[in-house]
Amino acid sequence: MSSNIKVQRFCQHCNSEFTARTTVTKYCSDNCAKRAYKARMRAEKIEVSEKETTKIITQPIEILKAKEFLNVKETAILLGCSIRTVYRLIDKGIINAVNLGERITRIKRSDLNSLN
Image (cartoon, rainbow, N blue to C red; front, side):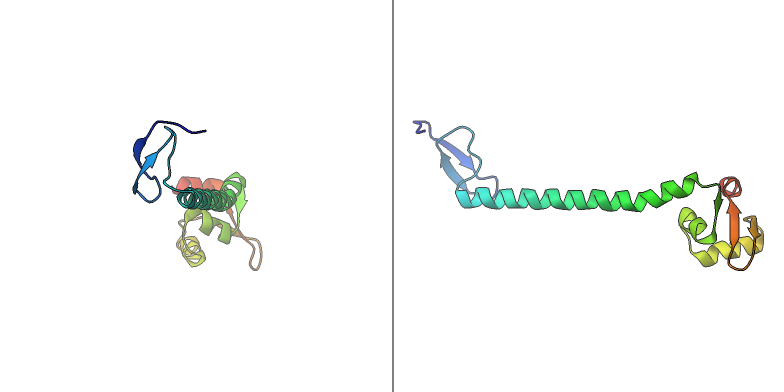
């Protein structure tokens, strides 16, 4: 389709000036169009990957919020501190915990809610 219209435009990819024959032309050449397409696809892939990552990171926290009793590791994740800090808080009496045996320390969720 040929056109008699000639419009001066700037390429959206390389920002060089060119003469467009249609009113919808965005790029100065086929190479710029292909490069812009690849950049757009790359950005979409990165965005999808970042969304998956945030979904994976937030998923365990939501599961922990639903539990009634937590172990020390889960409590550390929920509070955003180290395991050693949780043990220190238990020793000081700031967090109430029940030791059911060796390496079986359980912390009630309601005790953590009253901590905040």
